[in-house]
Image (tube, rainbow, N blue to C red; front, side, top):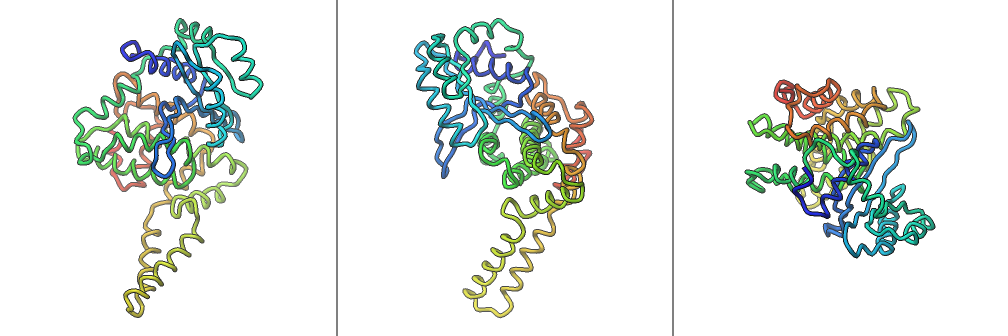
Length: 337
């Protein structure tokens, strides 16, 4: 519960609950990185499916301080929105001056001022029966062996960061790798249900975002598109094959062994063919409208006060986890306990 955490994080949790209540998918504390440097944190990242063809991504800047420097935060939030290519931005501040709101309106920045925040603390929309981000991280760290256990704190932070910049097949493939490792840990007897649920939720948000441009395509077209994306990543098959040929030629020139280039190229092609992309392609191509809602349900399960096993979740969530288990080569009985 948020009453046991400091003032700043408590405000972030209250606003997170507010945006969840009005239908957004929300991630808190997403790190924006550039060339492995942490540039800044996005306090809240919002995602909404407004229509079959339209999605909304929003960065929220929150300052719950006596001297919030609200005008400066408007500049900062707007600049971050532009850099990340998001659709809009919000500044939540304890400042209640009318000039702050007017300045925000002039620059297309929504301002939630001190009066709004004061009302929010008294509203049921700021409260939900769920654990906070701090409690989630504490459970994640509790009993962890750091790198020996997969360094899941770092992986979780990277998962949130991908929401900012990698809602594409490269991001999906990174989430799929994490899900495979999580299912392996679960199969070995280490329950990582919360992290599995939130990672699956992030993956589904990316799938929903990708498929928005293919809603009018027929099933076979979507299936082929998804298959290629999962198998070859964002760059596609043509680029992958080109790199494969270049790598094979380079290896042969260094090793000076006739036929080695062909062997290397065949091995790369074999590895691509072994990816069970058709499993995901068929599943995701069939349903282009429900993944956002499933992501919301999985996010709620990840932050529930008492974490449930997949068998206690709704059938749609179980279906997603089952298909991901099939893709990762994990027995469904292990994945859906």
